[in-house]
Image (cartoon, rainbow, N blue to C red; front, side):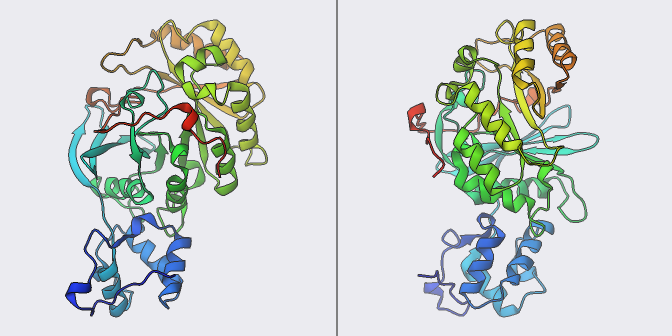
Length: 381
């Protein structure tokens, strides 16, 4: 049965509460067009709504001047554009900004903006906490409370654009969005996929496929599904070139080992734009995974693949047993990769003075439910 949109002239007692109104942040163009068709409106009205919300940053239906007054009233009665509530904000000495955003139930997530000379990258969360339990990641040590819905994911981008004083039409402060905040994006596939579509939609945020990156610790079935469903950049949290070490650092490897993961990576890039490569994230841990021998093993593993290795100096957090690799060890590791014709860069640590660097996001996660690896779906049904 089609959902009913109550008219604005309905009795006050029958009007939906603000919370029960549909949050349009959660609807991609396909779903929004279908919804407009259900209520007898032209589907292209959905395109206009999306432009108002995402390109112009407008959350007041009354201000959407090219919509009929009756439609604006109906939207006001049954829909909402609900940005998250800000709980806290910090700004690093290097210009990085971190927002703590309320997502209900006493939970909070963290979203980080990293400015650079040629780009502005927004790192967004997809879950409240994370179940992957990667041993070097503070977020993974928090456990998992729940998945974010699409509206909560998309709203982070809208909120950040407004907070930074720009938009996605005349002043694009945010040029790149990466799903590298709290959570494993592909473990929340049903909400992440429409969020990616909204980010890339010409009537949405209008970002190109190379400027939206989904990161994964290696959920192979969902990597295959992502390739089929949307064209977007992919980052893989690798951190070790062999199963013995990766089992320790990234426990999901026990379910999807390195060989299986690499096969999925080959499938992901097959037939794509020749410039499309996978970014392999490799956190540098002193005396653990930073030896010259492991660098050579990594080069052999990636030989012939369209790959870029992003070496990430470890960012410490309370009670961790790891230490950051020495600069000379990182340089030597990168040099070996480059000598084997593997593109390698070292990520400059940003925002560590406000715990906003890679692997440091914790938010507020209560009633943690650490799922066993056996609970992770085997197939992307």
